[in-house]
Picture 1 (tube, one colour):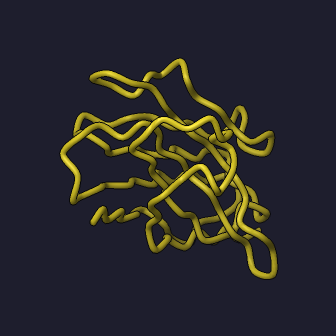
Picture 2 (tube, rainbow, N blue to C red):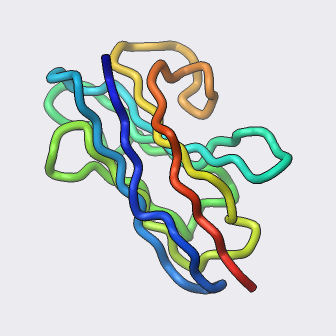
Length: 131
């Protein structure tokens, strides 16, 4: 049973930065892809960023961002296997949401920007940006 755990959320002011981390347990093989999604109150869960690849490391070249995240957010793989971070800079009030980490351990043709592409999810971490 794979478990994903997010950390790093909090309450910040507009323009501040936060770094979210996602660690996994329960699997020793390399994830095919990991992603970040978010869900604001009253809204559907939406894609934020993904990183994917094969072999010994998630490929930094296989990275995708939502338009809202481009230029402000950076997803990266940490030194520990199946651990990814989301560096969020220049935060805006509209970034307020619960942020979820997701993982997939097998190849898929589904777009990694979609919820259905991922099999495993964390419980989420709250990010609140005040104006």
